[in-house]
Length: 405
Image (cartoon, rainbow, N blue to C red; front, side, top):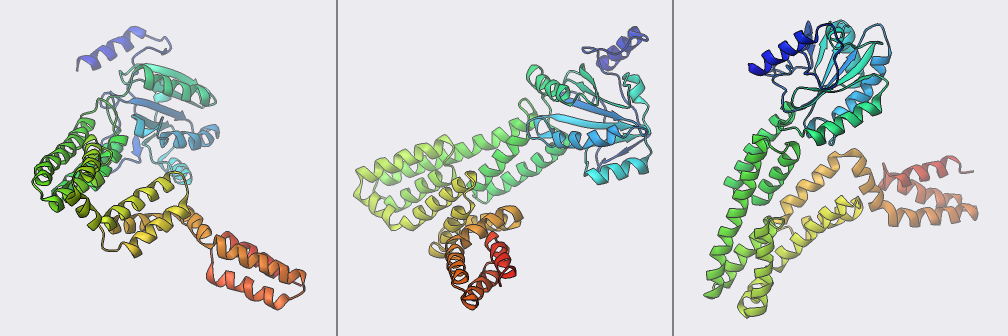
């Protein structure tokens, strides 16, 4: 309450002077709000403290605002300077609900927008459209015209460095809470690898200093503790000759929590006991297929990171066929399904699968065409269309067929 009164007092003291960088931002208003989801409250600067707030103003009588909103929408979803980084974007316009709704639908805009607003006057926005950036402390960090896009980006980046957000964007916070619940379910089911993956995904959506980040770190600490508890159980088992059970526990830690310190320590112990105990080494060899399947899975993930989609798919497919009884299979199947759901990525996979065979057939078909053996060429080209649809090779084969004499 004291902060609000201080802001009001400062606004009163300012009188008719123009708002300047460093002033506390006055409240904004709108007759109605769009893109407010059920359960969400109307944006309020007091409630948004702790985030960088970007206000985009535009008017109904100038087309510039509708043009710039495309850019605003892009950076609002940018991982570095968008909502994932603790930046909250708001649109404010004097336009009607219907006119604004059409603009938002055409540009797939999902951040909150207030319509029939007069706040542009309060913020001294002239020329039809402009930007205001408010830092996490509630002070104006930037004011600029709609054409000063680079100035806006620079101001956001500066605000993120000078006054880092301490509050996660509400939309991201809802996702994080769902992921935290998912983590707890995975831990209850002893699916520690999935729990860690969900926790790291959640952490990327939170900002440092937010209570949500602390909750996610608590989950990661719990996984670390679970890993060390299993290591503590494995050591006496191995040292008393119960190699199979001890190897199983160490293998689970180093496979499911390999990124954490407990996973790295389990890896070192694994190597040490293989050197020290013949019985441990025999137990490990008995489960070699599990280790090989795990190796293929992590290699496939690295291939994906490096955009080697075809190689990643081949490794995952090998797991589902050659190592169908291992723990890695369901993870491989899940990753394959996610690859298939991404149309562009799956196109790369299909092209990689088709590469060797199709390039050979295309070379043979071109040779047949040069030798005027058109029917043989047609047979190969039609086979590419039939067996490898939706690939770059299908396109080339179709062009050759169209241009065939």
